[in-house]
Image (cartoon, rainbow, N blue to C red; front, side, top):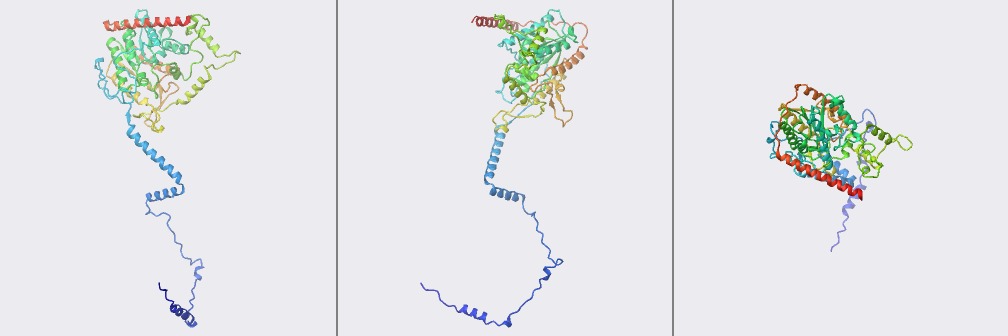
Length: 531
C-alpha cells in the first residue's frame, strides 16, 4: 500500500504570503456604535404572538396529551384503561340493557259496557317490566281467594259479620267502601282484628261515617290487607255483596297491590279494576260507583302477603309496646293472645308501658337491634321524594356496574292508570272518579315545578298515616255528601237477583274446607298444650 505524498508546498506558500504582507495594505474601518446606547434611537423590540391561529385545536390537544403522557405515563395508562371500560359499559348498556316503556296503556278500555267485553287476548305483556315472567300477576278476569291463609279467612268472616245488621234490616246503609289494606285500616282493623294502635283510626272513621257517633252518613269498610282486584272480586261474589245489601254508593279502592305488590302491568291493573266495577254495575243496577284513584307512590311493595312492617311503613315507626297482651294464667286461655278492647285497659297498658320500675317515663322498644334497624330504615327512606315522570326504564342499573336491578318507577304507571280510569268514568253516568293525587302531592303548579310526595301524610309505598287518613276521609265525606244529596228521599227498590248454582256450590265447598281447617288447627293447638 503506497503512502500519501508529503507535499507541503501549498501550506508554505500560504504562510509566506501572510508574513510578507506589508502594513500599508491593512485598512482600519471605524464603526460608530454610539447610537445603540442612546434611548431615543433604540431599535423597536419585535413582539411575537403567543397563539398561532393557524394551529388546529386537535393538534393542540394532541400535543398536550403527549406532554402529559411523557410527564406521567402511569396516570395516563390508568385513564386510558378507565375510558375504555366506560365505553364498553356504554355499549353493553345500549345493546344488552334495552329500555322498557313505563306508564303506557296500549289499548282503550273507556267504552267497555260489560265484563264480557274485557279480554286478555290483546295484552302485550303482563308485568310492569315489559315481560311475562318477572311478576306474580293473576288473571284479573277470574275471581281468586286467599283462603290458604287463616288470617285472610278471619278477615273475610269479619267483613261478612259487619253486613248482618244491614242485611237483616236493622240498620240502613249509605256507602260501602270496598278494597284493600287502606280500606281495612281506615276502620281500625288489620286482618280481621282491631289492635290497640289502630283505635285512633277506628274512632276517626266513626266520626266521619257513623251517624250514631256524629257522622253525616252510615258507611261500612270492607277491606283486607294485601288483596288484589281478583281477590276483591271473589269476596264480592262470596258474601260481601249479598242480595239484600243495597248501599246507595259503592266506593272502590283497589289496584295498588296489583301494581306495586304483584307488579302487574298498567293494562292488566286497569282490566282488574274495571272487572270489579262491571260486577257491581251488573248486580246492583240502582247503585252509583266511585272509583278512587291510585295513591301516589315511588317504591314497590315487597312480599306476597302483608305483614306488620307494612303498617310500620305507614306510621313511620314500630308501634310502641306489644300489639296484644297475654293473660298471666298458665292454662289454655293464657296461651292465646287476644287484643285489649276496653278503653280503660288500653289506658292502663299505655301507662305501664311508658314507665319503668321506678315510675320514670321511658320509651319502650322491642330490642336495641330493632331500634337500630328502625333508624337505618328511616335514613334509607327519602323525605318528600321527587315524582319523576320518566317513561323509560332499564332493568339493570348501569351506575352500579349492572350488579343490581334498577328500581321500577311507580309514578308514571300510577299516572297512566288514573288517566285511563278517569276517561272511563267520563263515559259512564253511574261511575264517578275521585282523584286523591292533589291531597298527597306537593308542587307541580307550573310546568317547570317538580312534583314531590308529601311524606308528612303518606309513605313512599303509598300508605297513609293518621294525618293522611284524616285528609282523605275529609275529602271523601264532602264528595259523598254532594252525591247523596241527589238521591231521592224514598227508599230504593231492592232488585231481586237470581241465584247462581255454581257460585253457591263453590261457596259451600269453601265453607266446608274452612271448617275442616279450623278443626285441624284447634286439634293441633290442643295437642301442643298437652305436650
